Each structure stands twice: as structure tokens, then as C-alpha cells.
Image (cartoon, rainbow, N blue to C red; front, side, top):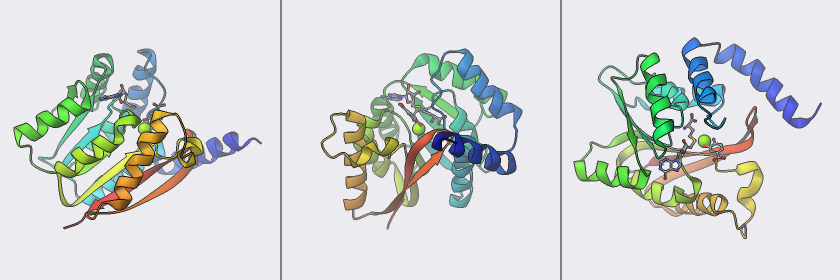
Length: 223
Ligand code: SAH
Ligand code: DHB
Ligand code: MG
């Protein structure tokens, strides 16, 4: 058995047990695929991890960068307590449109806000609005901008907030210091900034599964 086949088989086993079939989530993936969106949403068991982290965090305000079809958005928004809110930022109007339909089907349209445009512009707008601090930020948009996204995440959070970075391993590419892949350089700079920042305590974990070899980072904002 090839490695990828093995990882996929284990993910199928774990997912069937712990993130079982869910018509709303499956419809979100199906509609995303039908609309031609890339197949790069988090895996089901990773979505469940986001959900559990949001619950553990008691997150009332969640910010997501990179909506795609709203698959991870549904997992996160389902962890919101009554009165909670999630804002998700997406560059592609077509992705945002698919996501809004998926969120409406999930009954989450009242508690989520899909904002279209470059995330850097939407983040500046959030700061200008004087948005209340977010309890959890999930960074999953264009990897080259992760360093700037981290700076904004720090401005838009509070002590105790959790900042999650997706796709920080990239099949191992992250160890190539001289890589000319801007995604790799963006993630490396993001991890270095995370490590160096006096107000963050953080780790990163590599993962294998149905989506290949990748990983995520977790950082808590300190007082
Ligand atoms: N979080 C999603 C996957 C996001 S994929 C999930 O797991 O289900 C990354 C998304 O970031 C894509 O939809 C892409 O269009 C979007 N994106 C890329 N560049 C962006 C930018 N500058 N601002 C906002 N979103 C961006
Ligand atoms: C890509 C982006 C993602 O957010 C992801 O989880 C996997 C792949 C990409 O841009 O290739
Ligand atoms: Mg991702």
C-alpha cells in the first residue's frame, strides 16, 4: 500500500468514527466542486479539530481568512454560542457566493458574514470599524501574505485569543530556506514571526491524511 493510500484509509476510519456523515457538510463540498472550486478545504477530521478548538476557546467572535466554499466556516460557526459571530474574508466573489449559499443551507447565514475582497483590505476595514477583538483567528488565505495576516491578527485579538495557521508544512517544503516558492517563504516568515513574538506562545504540528502531508500552527496571545 502506498503511503498516501494508507493515510487516506486511516483518515476514512477516523472520520467515520469521529466526524461522521453530515448532509450539510457534504452538500457544501459537493456544491463547491460543482461550481469548480479547488478541492482544498480542510479534511473532515481537521474541520472537527477547528470546531473543538473553537469550543475549547469558548470563542464568541471568530475571524477566518480564506473562505473558499465555506466548509471550514461551517465547522467553526457551529461552535459559536448564542449571540456569537463569525466573519470570513474571501478574495474571489465566486467563492464567496458559493460559501454564502452553503452557509444559508447550514442555517448559519445569520451568524456569519462573508466579506469579499483582498483580506488585507477587509482587515484594515475591520480595524477602522473598531471591531471588538476576536477570540479565534483561522488564517487560511494566500500563503505569501501570512506574515501580514499575523500582524493584523495580533491587532484584532486580545490576551487569551487563539491564532491558527493552516498549511504551514506544504509537503515538507517549509524546511527549504532557499525556496523560490512564495508560499513557502510566506509560511517560513510567518512561523519565524510567531516564534519571535514576545506576546505569543506557539507550536506547529505536521499532519498526514487524505489531504497529503501538511500541518498547522497554534498560537496563544499572551497578556
Ligand atoms: N478555509 C477553507 C479553504 C480556503 S482555501 C476551508 O478549509 O474550507 C484559500 C482561499 O483563500 C481561497 O478561496 C482563495 O480564493 C482565498 N484567497 C486567496 N487570496 C486571498 C486574499 N488575498 N484575500 C482573501 N482571500 C484570498
Ligand atoms: C492550498 C490552500 C489551502 O488552504 C489548503 O488547505 C491546501 C492547499 C493551496 O493553495 O494549494
Ligand atoms: Mg488550508
